Length: 323
Ligand SMILES: Nc1nc2c(c(=O)[nH]1)N[C@H]1C(S)=C(S)[C@@H](COP(=O)(O)O)O[C@H]1N2
Ligand SMILES: [Mo]
Image 1 (tube, protein in one colour):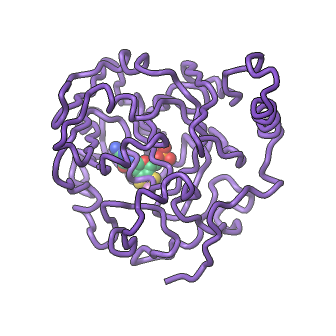
Image 2: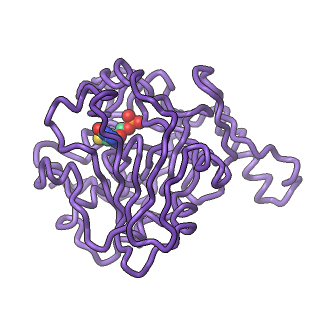
């Protein structure tokens, strides 16, 4: 066990604050001061890479949704990926995911809900106003990125389908099609890739259904046309290329639990004080930082820095047991 003192919420160091962040802060300050709030631009300010179709999002007002840390470069975020359906090497998804067909695409919403249905991707794109959310994403492997996602809170969809009293967990099923996904030939995981959340975790406003990043639609390798992003959990909770969202009564087994139950628990909350059996979780490497693999590692924050927003979801739970 590692004994890093808990620092709670940690502010970024000044060298990480970019001119864009300062502009944002000034606007936030103006808004807070009640000055000329209506004249402020609603659109978020992330520069588009100009690679894919634009998908703008308004700056989110959800608490914790706009970290002011330096953004990871788009080139890094779109080429260093885990998406085992396209291969297990970090470079495989960017190389192979061009075979993924993202239209037509439907998501089945089923199980313990009063209004189940099949939602077309183009319906989902219009279901709620798009927001930009700047989230840290930390992989259980010990690297992290800061990505401006575009999407809306999953709770928008959950509310519309009206979960019944039997809906205790939400299961996320992702695409498994051998014709499009060369990685399915490997049995590294039980396909389809399946993840799950407790209903209250799924309803938390920070839990994002993402359709884009950096002001554009998602690149295939990042989970097009839609994925989950759960910023306080290890990256593997954030299933890519979702095809079904299922409301169930019993806690489902996830793909990673099936593959290695001692290493990947159901909760997968970022917790620097609970080591992975084979490596420390106390620190992390920020992708793209000077020094590459040899860059100074930074301390990992409890709940990936989202403890003020999500800590109470786990009040009274032994996070060493429920890892
Ligand atoms: N369908 C699917 N979703 C997935 C994965 C995967 O292999 N298949 N990998 C997960 C893991 S381990 C991480 S860290 C994140 C990585 O997301 P990114 O490539 O956008 O950074 O996606 C998650 N979602
Ligand atoms: Mo991961």
